[in-house]
Length: 321
Image 1: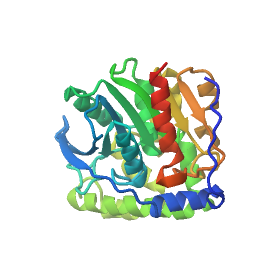
Image 2 (image 1 turned 120 degrees about the vertical axis):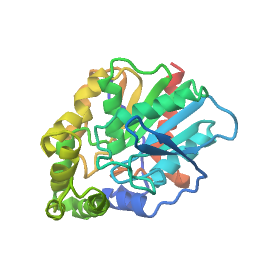
Image 3 (image 1 turned 45 degrees about the horizontal axis):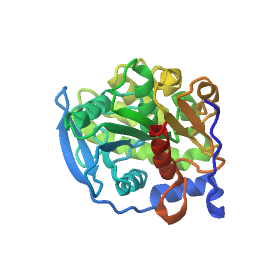
Image 4 (image 1 turned 60 degrees about the vertical axis):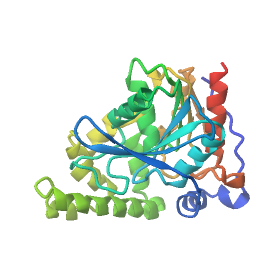
């Protein structure tokens, strides 16, 4: 599929990727009424799903996945859910394991390549017998999960009609290297602080799995993935985790209309995170690379972000084909 040209033109001050990323992450506010449902997983753990609804009964649903250390109340989640609700589409805003108000039940939690819980959520939505059309949207880490999910399976549920992924680290190792550069130190340190704080809680609960010495050895995001993410989830080390969990290798097998929006001034993304070759060789994969937008910072008018408008537009357009 040819590369999609982008019409995104932000206000002047938000052409700066750092400013748009920080503003969107720290200052944006979206008001949305959500109803929480806790579902039990096959391994005995749980997931908290935050539902929001269209005003009228609908057969359409969007499932939203957040980024690293995010949750269902992040503005990029509630903003999308609200817009889709206003267009007669229900929404599930997912909290990954341990990302709601309560630590999950086990030492392991979630990671960039863990797609099994998404499959469970989709099955749960289908089991309600309310939805004949399901769309997926993932942001950052959640975008990698969505794209990997779509590409690693030979068959998808018939109800899944289209997907959108935003600010996606398609190559996890490349993105990791970018996050460790000086330009991204404020973001790196913020992510690391949140991750380590959550891991401290787990260390108290599961001291046999993680010693204080190992916890205190974590000084970088790479350390975190070497000490916790990789070993806890069955990988040899961080590099093995990045290699096996990156969605890039699965893009050629995506069989439903899928839109990837990665800004060219996203400082989190390496060159490998822009899958130009893969998009050109797969008629289902649409790649849009706006000049601006930073990392999930596609600021637009009326507090509705460009990527949210494009997600709605894309799903509607694809269903008319």
